Length: 283
Length: 258
Image (cartoon, rainbow over all chains, first blue to last red; front, side, top):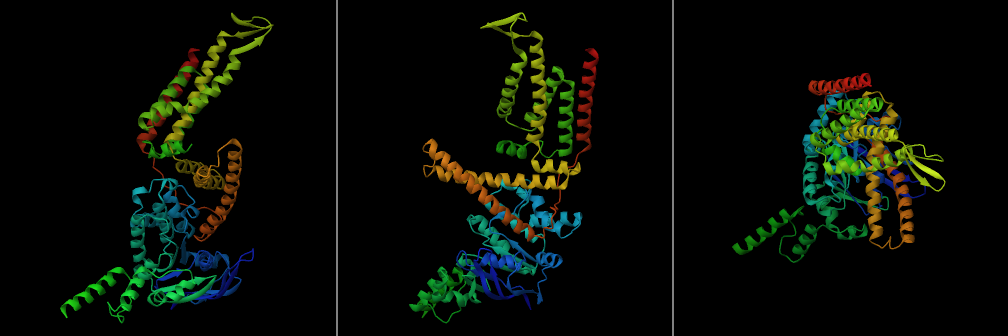
């Protein structure tokens, strides 16, 4: 069953910029979707539409096969199910207190105080926020702010979490930690959509890859298929992941078998190479 | 100001209930101002200073330096009380100045000294509060006192965005300096105006983005958040009440003597 579906949505800003043009996309429940595209290709506008912040001028959005109801009540319902973690935490965190910040969405949903305290504490523990919970948000590092921004959304227990470039401008340690948390989200039945510029990450993580170009869906498909198509990527100003490049070269040179499934990370590729070298030395 | 804020978060008294701290600071301030006596002012200064520096762990040198600005204002303004200009040499000390006399009144010295001490005592109460209690905790106190919600919400947003905008302004200034934006007076004025315009534009843009982000978390016109704050222990309440009672006692005693 598709959990979220857009049908030919078009969004034009007041100044005439056509940010989205006839975008039709289906997100299946539990599917990991990566959105790729150059800056200004319409990803962020698309996200704001999925959450009901922007209302497309044409086309419609279906949540669980029901068209989105743009009344106050309908929007609250949609936003409680679809959460967005914004790219710049400074545009999302409105309170100087970490605790207040995280509780905001939950209180808006009308949770009782007891329930809210319990859930805020749980999410802080899960996302390793406890060591700095008493610090004001303006004294947190970029990575810590990102953790809080993610907690803001997860505490509301949405069915879909949208992340706009979650690991941009983070140090390797925080990137790894955040990725580790993100990888576990689908296990909890949360459908995750990520916009990213990190090709290697998208290849390893995503089930489905969608390429955006000039406000249109330029291509979509399985991660392996999209990334093997170098020509397609070039036309969206993107480059192939390093794993794929190396894999194609090695196949072309006959070092490894071209019929092997496309590797999604270096570990798999390494295994292919060692296997191939071993079989040669044995043979 | 940024330094004051940082000190409040790292203060040793941070996790004492903000209600107790606010009560102590405000009551002591009122007593100090109404009593208007040197003894009370000195006690206030000593106790508040002691609490802030020894219990709170504020750097003593920095703490003393904080008094420089209020002291400067006080000295300047009390100067006019002590010194007066008249045609006749009214007091025992009078400096001739052309046709007039600069006169110093003896009791005015005492009066001015008392005024300075009272004002410093009051300032020490406020420093105690601001150096031990983060703004988020003060907002909690305002909430308990049933301060209008709109005011508390505004303070909450303003406080958060002071830092966001301050960082932005600092970053713009640095990048201007690195391109010789302040090589002389004229260029620095130009750079400054550019920075302020940019800051205004970005602040407007940020407010829109923030509103979107809040709306996407089901914001419905009222900022609902959990308030977390240290609870007042019985010991703290008793100590604060006892201190105020003693201060009040000394005030009454002094009044009776005079």
